[in-house]
Structures are given as C-alpha cells and as structure tokens.
Picture 1 (cartoon, rainbow, N blue to C red):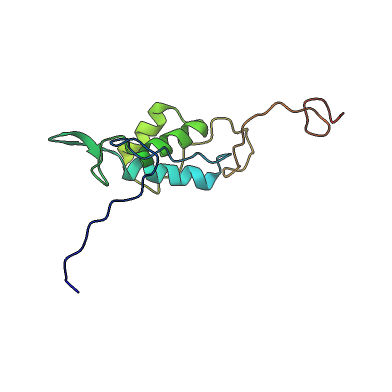
Picture 2: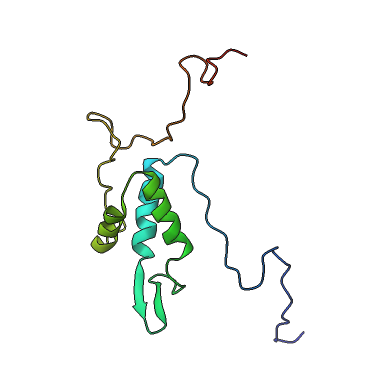
Length: 132
C-alpha cells in the first residue's frame, strides 16, 4: 500500500458550485441560553480588516460568516437593536451578560423564554375559541 492518498470526488450536495453553505436555522423560540450563544457567536466571529477585505476574526471567511449572521438574527429576535449588538461586539466579551430584555415587564425573571406573540383565543388556544 502506498503512502499517497487518492482524491475522490465528493458526492453532490444539491447546491450549485461556488454557493456557500445554507443559513443556520433559527430556534422556534429564543431562550436565554440561545441568546447567550448568540452573544458568543457575534463576538467571536466579529469583523476584522484584512488586506483582502473584511473577514471573520475566527475563521477568516468573508464577513459576515454564517455564525455571525445567525447570532445577529437570534439577538434581533430577542429584541436587541443593531446598536445594542454593535455594543456587544465592541465590548469583545463573549460571556457578556445580555442587556435587559426590551419586552420584559418589571418583575419578570431575566431568563424568561421569549416566544413569538401568536394570536390565540382565550379557550383552547385556537383562533376559533376551541370550537370545531
């Protein structure tokens, strides 16, 4: 057996040549843990100026990379504005606590799960009031 390796063509993924990986799916609702992972993603995968343009500080892929985009989308779902996200990146601490949840009411626990506000009726959780 020789020590050289044989390059085999990889099976097709169904994507066109030159097209990058697909977006990372968002969670169905954003928990405090998801938001903390998102903070880590946007801070660790922050932009960095390089001779070829702006790249991801972590993996040198073109900025914004997949994880930075995912983190930004999760934090936006959590209610943070672009300025809040930029401040987290500027701070540079991947374990930074989140700013107070903008939709939280006074007295709500800080790690409350953020669920989308879907219109539901009082009974049965169905728009028709539980009547079939």
